[in-house]
Image (cartoon, rainbow over all chains, first blue to last red; front, side, top):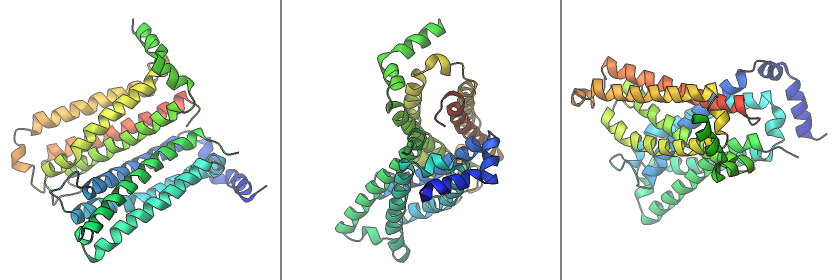
Length: 166
Length: 166
């Protein structure tokens, strides 16, 4: 048995896992909270990225759009981690033996990295990304990459239910 | 009459392809989830502003112009993808209590939106940009938020009552 098999077997035998599995309503309820937190993330990401692309809300500055919506994203991620961890505890093999789950986590790390790269320079200088033609191009590209990554994460999340590990 | 129509919908080439293929259903379902997160997230931006919990430094009108185009585009996408998912097993879905409840709640959400325009439309100019919204606007926002969370819950439960893919 490899490490993941051992982990799945141990986690699946814990009291927490048994309790969640026994009460039928817990898994869908936790999934609902997970999906509502995804709604918060995706809407915030879309608002910010459309503004970075100059497609929407041009009457708001980039900085004020980021200040309004980015805290939603960072506030929702802990909710996603806790609800996600609960779902893994309930059915360890469904995710930990599933390549789609690891794809989703890799995409999540990439999306967080892109978001931080866009956000951090704005702390020192609110107009950082508008200062030169090169930076304006870079931030538009980052917005497209960010949208593509977050959308892929949603699809990967749904595909976890349809793929099983070897 | 209704059953015959559902049966012919279910027997259509597209519905059969969705039902019989391995990949089409999860892809459409992923798109449906994505659209739904954007509908709920963007409506929540308006509802939370109506209740007075967020964005109080910005007018209600500013938040509706920001959010509602996304709400409507995502809603159209959710209806199309939802219709495709429904068609794949129309005769069964039509009798599913969760789906029936979801459609009823969608009707209520529409009526709530109508009430907003009827009750609040006339004197809207007076408070739409004010930091504090009247209590009627708060009630409408609160009802809307509850209805959309219930709609998401029903949607998630359909999957648990009808398919092996939770």
